Image (cartoon, rainbow, N blue to C red):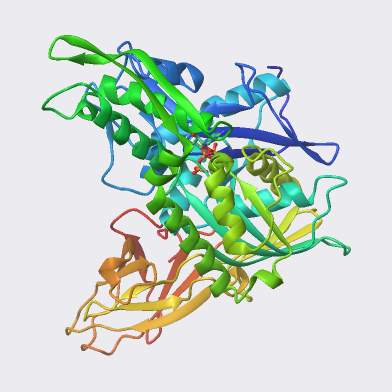
Length: 507
Ligand SMILES: Nc1ncnc2c1ncn2[C@@H]1O[C@H](COP(=O)(O)OP(=O)(O)OP(=O)(O)O)[C@@H](O)[C@H]1O
Ligand SMILES: [Mg+2]
């Protein structure tokens, strides 16, 4: 690497299974190859007993011999405050492990570009909660990027399609993004034939716990049932589990092009001192039976998105398939049946998200934080993106019910709301507000984002203070909270006691 700093913003698709990176070159998004010469880097991190850390392809191949030291699918733990991956007594948080992946991608990009890279756009599932997004942003900062912006995966995919020369798209577009661990279904109104192209997201629906890994799981359990072992569940053995996972994924991928596949491994692991193997056949029909529940869940998300956007099959102009799990024929059939549109898949479904992130980094304007006084993220760019928040943001009331302050699918430009609170005891100087995201009327059934603690309230009789709390969502889709006590000029300090939403400096 020379001493130069690249002017370019790197786009990164930080995936559950694979991550990719792209830049804008001559106005066209371009994937960058990693140091192994591949477009995709497995999102796998392996910790050696000498303190070394391997990321990507090498970590992937070390997984079977290093069970318990190798972490895959860390994205599924993002925002889970209770999760730590412990190796030799050292705790690695989801943010730390994601930062290892982003760090390798940054180094490889710098080697490729022969310049240091300081600015990045990282994609997240649109359906990620505010704290999952915030933690992703933090991982980017921990990886050493100076400027970290986030954008939503389905929006990025639409941008990659829309901004590729000679491939203008227009109209009401359903983006079906089904990867290794997450499903996003977004409906985006695209207008490219105007001075400033506009991408307006109408709804973002999804399921952060549904992906190709669930197909692998279903096959693994089926294969485990065929093994010649008594008693203990072979999947409890980490070596067998890892080897069967690999066999299951290979079989699944093979079944995307073949009606039948051989599952043959001469060694899976040891049971009762004996090596065990597998030699069986799996048909596409059997596989489809194994994933029937997942396919139903996929259909439900599509229906829900179309209902919420009030869009029928006749209103859809285009359906884009994104993510490796859209290679599964039964998935494609489900999408076509539910939408009534033959899906577009002219582009590589596991590259479009990174490509769109690069477009976003260089060209997009986004408005957020409410109409007045909010943050308008301005770029010399020439594309307008209008995003929505995927799920309602609100607080828990005394009776445990959920009080939404900003409704789900609200446009980011309008994503602000104000609520008033007071004290219940005389001379109470501290009020705690529990912040949740979700759609359930019972607060506890939603995702808790923070305990927001307001301190410095001047001593007054109960009920006298008027505490004005303002929620707004910034351009990264992250909730920010501000608070004021209106009857005095006392400065209220806001402190997040469960460190999730990062509102400390704002209040
Ligand atoms: N040909 C194929 N047939 C079936 N499944 C495939 C095929 N190729 C890849 N996959 C599956 O696609 C998934 C990975 O897709 P992708 O790389 O889009 O996910 P990701 O971006 O890592 O995950 P996410 O977007 O959920 O965070 C894996 O489950 C993989 O097994
Ligand atoms: Mg993905």
